[in-house]
Length: 303
Image 1 (cartoon, rainbow, N blue to C red):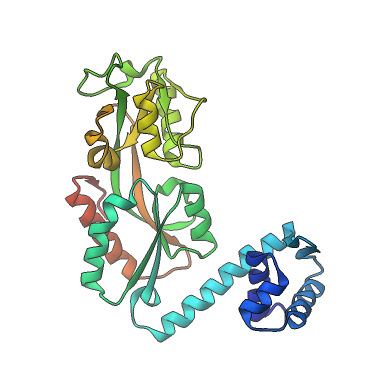
Image 2: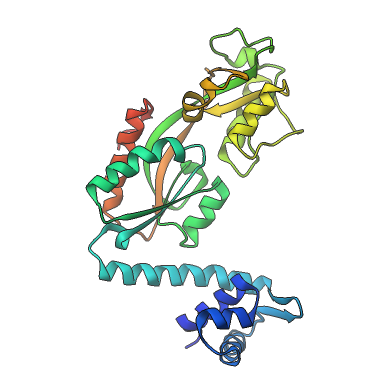
């Protein structure tokens, strides 16, 4: 019964390369053969997967749905093959997604410990925002992610730590002489945060609502560095996660960085896996990550 795994590979390749000719060349098959196989899938399913034109192959809406599901299936098949060939966790290759504000500080220590424990395990790390991590864990692009658990329902969740938030202000800001800020000091202030693809933005909106502050609609940062630079210009108060603030922010000469002390001014971080992943090594991985977080003086969440 169609579609076969090979036909799925053909469809995914055409989608990625936007060309039947290039896809055939990469897959080492003739273009007529590839075209016939994709036409057979379209006939079997009664849908058009691609619009053909001079500009190349454009994937239709139904085609995009097919590609998303096909990628998940192909990824699972490859994972199955790797697992059967290897006694290593995750088939010898752990594809790990992580928030950009976490990865550079937590993972060096954690990966070093993982390598000592499983020297033949290959760890492939990608830093992406919350929305992209969720997409990746659901379509099989990631084996596991390190992110905020509330943004990834229907996953296996291993709590790791709670990360408090800090603030960054320009040196000539009226609050720059404080040692820490609370809700009262934020009242009427303009807060700077990342774009809404990040959980941090939603947390900052909650902080604004609770303190009487407002979130700047003039600027949405794409990185924490950009938030620091905007705060330095006096555009508002930047909200930063603890790891970035303590490892980088406090050393930035253009801003004054201090803790934010108010209820819910923090974020929880967890290791998350797909529901169908019964990987016993995940418990050990979570323990390794908690150990790295503990060495960074974060508030560990007990298993």
